[in-house]
Length: 181
Length: 221
Image 1: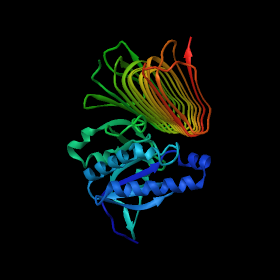
Image 2: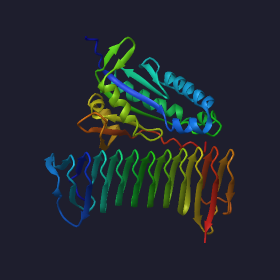
Image 3: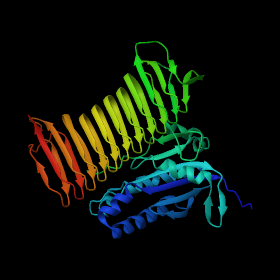
Image 4: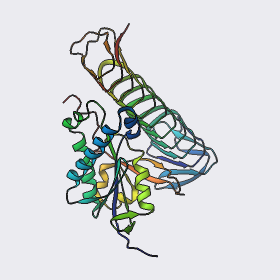
């Protein structure tokens, strides 16, 4: 059985500490956060990409263009770091983290499936609040913009034999930076 | 300062890097190759042991082994899934672990740490950015710190004039400042107790925001 393959930037955005926050503060807050996350991501990516699907507190995104993907993901963090966002959940931290990987997943209806999707998801798990991490494959697609990234240690991903080189966007905003605003 | 960089990739091996007053990188244990002037060392399960010149930049990735860095290194980046990480001294540090603990002795510039559930312990650093979900963050002394925890506890010792931002969901935040220092404070806990033993003035700034954690600021005698 074969299905179409699409090549582009695969991104993950998720809410840091969502399991703990849900346990501490309940399902109503969890639902509100998930809805705010989706709304914020939709607004930030505009026509540059699309939300493929929701996975718990995470969103799988897809972009045709790698540079647009980088800019859109940083825009998500800039939106989330807006002081007004911090007032939304009555003191409960609303922190996002994200990852980007360039690959060729299989298309199943509107969904994307495959190794590259799994890899992008795993990389996001190592990101700090407000941080965008990207793989080597993504950086190979962005030309001079790769200078906006610094290399961090390679990571091992479950089920993948070779380590994955990972980079951090130096423009990642620090989530607490505007607390004083 | 050494221009040769060290890259280490090890799946389940222990990694030891020693910075010493030598002129070149030497690999005592591990498979090494020279790539563009840098040294890349890899290992599946055999321990890695490397000696580098002081000030060398090091990038390490391990799945489950422990990482120990001794001596004065340059920029150090370490990622680990479950092993513990310790760095005695470095100019700059980026360390991440899913479940292991992370310990830093001295960091001259920026020390960025992310540990999901393991403990974070920083001796002294110029600037600390640290994040944990359920682990605990202890900073002995820092000029600037920006820390976040979900349920973990945060303890910070400020050196000089404080520049501190700490945020938790339910974790307690304890901060000590030098005697006589009177910072501007914003201490906001929705349901936890707030106690500030130091005077309030304009000697730097302390901002703590928590949903339900307690906040304690004290003056060191």
